[in-house]
Structures are given as C-alpha cells and as structure tokens.
Image 1 (cartoon, rainbow, N blue to C red):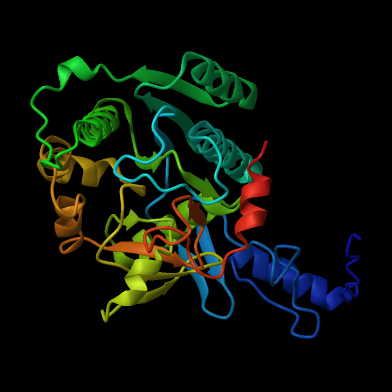
Image 2: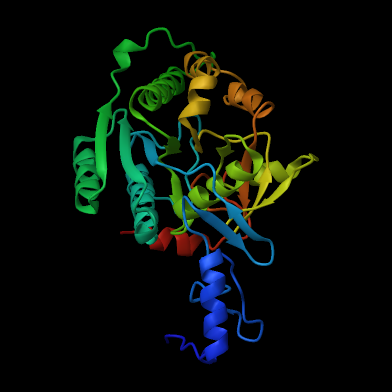
Length: 342
C-alpha cells in the first residue's frame, strides 16, 4: 500500500523563510513531521545529490569536492569451472553459469535502481571471459544489450600467459584453473589501466548485489573521499572471516550504511584509476605469481591506503555455506538471490 504523506501547508511567513533558506543553501527540518521543506523530502529519503552534496541527519552537509565522472565495472567470468580450488558446492547448489548470470543481473538492476541520479556518471561493463560456453556468452551479451548499458566482451587468450607462476598443488587440474584465474585477473588490470577513466569496480562472477549497492558505494565514495581528502578502496562485502580477528577499525557514516576500515579483502573491490596507476606493479604482481594467501600484495597496499567495507553487506558472495570467506552475516540471502533472477 502506498504511504500517503500528510504534510501541513506552511504559513505565508514560513514560505518566505523557506525561500530565503533555499537561496542561502540552508536545509531546515520540521521536527514534528521530519519534513524538509527546502528540498521537499522527508528525513528518511535520500537527501544527497551525487557530485554536489552529501546530507546525513543530524550530522549535516558535506560538500563534495571529489565528484565521480565514470564507473567502469570489470566482471571476470568463467562458467565452465565451479570453484577453482575446491570440490564443494556453492549455496543453493546451482550450475556455475547461474551465479554468473545473477551477478550480471544484479549489477544491471543496481545501476538502474537510481538511474535518475546517475545522469552525470558514465557506466560501462567489461566482461573479461575465460573458457565460458559459447551459449552462455550469448546469454550474457543479450542481457547487457537489452539493459542499454555500454559493454565490451574480452576473451582471455591463455597461450599468452606462460609467465604466470602458480604454487604446486600436486593437482594439474587445480593448477590449470588457477593459472586461468590469474590470466583473467591480469587482463582485468590491463583493461583498467588502458580503457578506464575514473572509478573501477573489479567483480568476480559469484557476487550478487543488493539493488542499492552501486548508489551506496558511489555516494559513500564521494562523501568519504571528500572528507578524508584521499582516494579509497571499497569492498562491498562484510566478510565473516574478518570477525575472527581482533583488529582496530575506524567507523565512517556513508549515505545509508556504516562503513568500517578493513585490512583484507578478496578480489572484488572498487577503487580509482589513480590508485590503479599508483600501485600498478603491486597489483600486477598478484596476477603473475601466486601467493599464500592469494591477495597478499593487495593487503600490503591496504597498509598504506584506506579500504572500507559496509555494515551490513551490500552483496552476497556465493561460496559454500560453511566458508568463512562467503556468506555475510545478517543478510536475507534468499531475498538477494531471488531479486537477481532477472
């Protein structure tokens, strides 16, 4: 049922006062109804304007000095391999292609969720694919084409990556899968360096996003980057394994979510082209030589830069239900899964 707003009409003198406040750029709020007459919104509505201001009640307004011009989303896909180094099933026990499709669906839905607020931001999706089935690639191409979002599909040529060194696992299949994964990662880094302009979001194809994910990440990036006067790393997942460690965290307030600093993440993260260039050699090292843990070079970057993750999570990592690197706490997993079907 649609909620009906019953806002008392302001008097003549109050109207004059509201106009005066609007001219000066002030926001005022009616405490009895939580209505903000200067912007004609309620306090619980989205009050921020991308590229201009971020407003949180009662903290007030942050003027955006670091506006976002574009977001390039680089999705690494492989529908032919379930889990690179494990034989366990993922949550919901579907074919790998289903997780890939739903990852893409969820990102399309998230871009469209606040489309009217993204008018000044350019979006493009890059599919960096390794060994997916031809029919699956056609489905991906159709989804992106129907979404009306600019996209490009890049096929990874494995014969060009002989220099990649993987750790010995005494299992040729796993080592082959790991090499293919690292080749995809390296390709995605080169795409970011050569084709992307501002913010870059690296996504693995088993991360299903909430509808508000993209808007919350972009609005929070602008707000916090403007306040802290520096570029950031953003991880969209509230990883359960990070609650097993006794570490200090700084807590920030984004648009509608709280964010905490973290020292680790997996390989789904958002950052800027500036930081990609700054740490190019470190990122590339991660795709040339396998480390234990795999993300070690990335974690060393986080010792120098700020990486934040949301509370609660903005996406669901579809690993095995018992994996501490998987399902974030306090999420409606079925709801996120079902919303990503189309």
